[in-house]
Length: 269
Image (cartoon, rainbow, N blue to C red; front, top):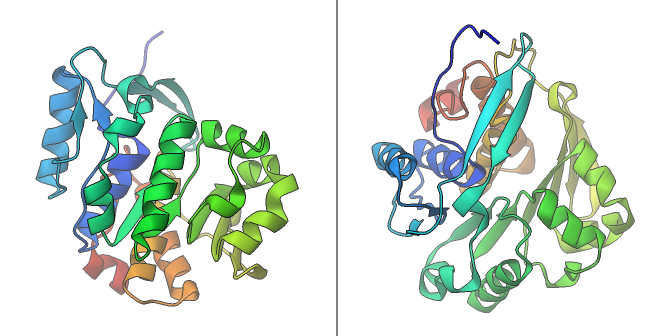
């Protein structure tokens, strides 16, 4: 099967958001797991080039760095073949209590539904008290929620992101989630989305009318924009504006990092 071309980029929710926060002027470190292979070197070099600390990147000799093949359609839609590899193997002993207690904020992407690791992260954040948490759960974490293997009331989350289908999957937990999490944003791609603030549906926002060449990373860019604005003291409406701008910029480029905005551009656009 002939294709027009291919490109190689580093990816994954953890590195997408770490780079996004760094570009917006925040100090960021990526806590993730790789193998000790050529791909791992590409990942760490890319993070260092973006001024993201790699001090917490875990390199495992017996594991393989995760990777994906992304097939992009003419309108920007994509099919992703995923081998999560080391990225889905974060264990409880990989989570450093000291560094979680010293940070201002943790943004948590999918970690393959590893229940014990999630519970340790939640416990450490609850103990730290002043550490904020935003969460973009993946399918593994959604399965734990649906099966009630995670106690919603034990999740110390301040901001959570779901797409429309993910929100539907946890429909039986909507009221609990809305009581527990002050900011819940439900995205619906080019149709915009809904913001729930302090348990109430606050407004529906619109997406920007842009031509997408690759939708990969749009959700991570959206989350980065919203959380960064929140950390910088902006109100939810302004945070949504940052989120929409960041996501709209990313989809104009191939790869999930190239279009991430810096502080000057996100404030100007």
